Image (cartoon, rainbow, N blue to C red):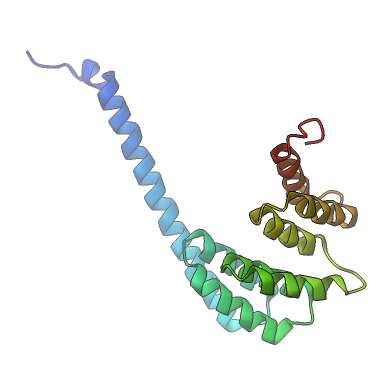
Length: 173
């Protein structure tokens, strides 16, 4: 017996396959969009190698696309150009940490904290390193210090909440 179009469209197997196809298509479009965005940011970075925002955005996209090995040299160039800025230093530390060079990253962060006006991002990166190393007390201290500098930082608040939850202190999370 022939299957009607109505029965085919409402068949759970067909509906599931349709959803899978839609998911794969959207993933492909997203992937293409990211590659285009990376290419665009690479061009911008070449024309303005001193732009921290471009370097950080490109570095983040490279990491998201499993191209971490390209992110660290990019941030090393940024440090050579704008190493005087705490944001450049903290993003360099984050790239070091993502490359597994945690001790070097902590050394960079310690230098930044000597600055009379450290940024919350410095403590976000430091807390993340301590969290990866399962040193939750130090991670929480770093996040809380960062929140004193930037009390409206959602990233710091979420990070501290995650640590409180991991410590079983759900009422404080």
